[in-house]
Length: 224
Image (cartoon, rainbow, N blue to C red):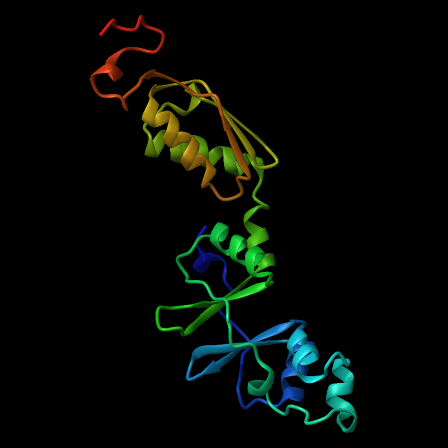
């Protein structure tokens, strides 16, 4: 599934000039732990609760930062002073798999979604990605049978055994050609909600080996 289909478009944002207390209040009121920082609609940073602690307090609590500033040397006043500028973003046409891998690799919980110019389009979170995997096994099987097999590969869907168990797909049976067997497995793995695919599909013709591919599966091998 594409990120544009998953992202939240009503995003709470701040600017570099937003006071820290205001940003903290926004995060508290909206129950979110981070905010994109915009300059003329372009993402220039992200501020999170971790930034408050790590960059402004030297390990003190957020409460100390906001309400006991006399205990802190040279406290920051605005979001721009503590925001992280190394922002991890993603484009709207990336897949949910791309987003999940990026979140895992960079250890972030959400990604600003931006266009080619860096303008904010939305935000995608771990929770958004998880919704892809909540599809029922019946929905996944239906898409594999009637979209991939019947419509894309023009294979009679009832001729192939498609089993789905908690997102794990098993394909079994015989298809006309080796290419179709490979495509069926690859396309099934891209279906939203699929975790893994195990294929034992056989084929009648190996259409990947030129003239030799014309022989039928199980036929004697020519002595060329």
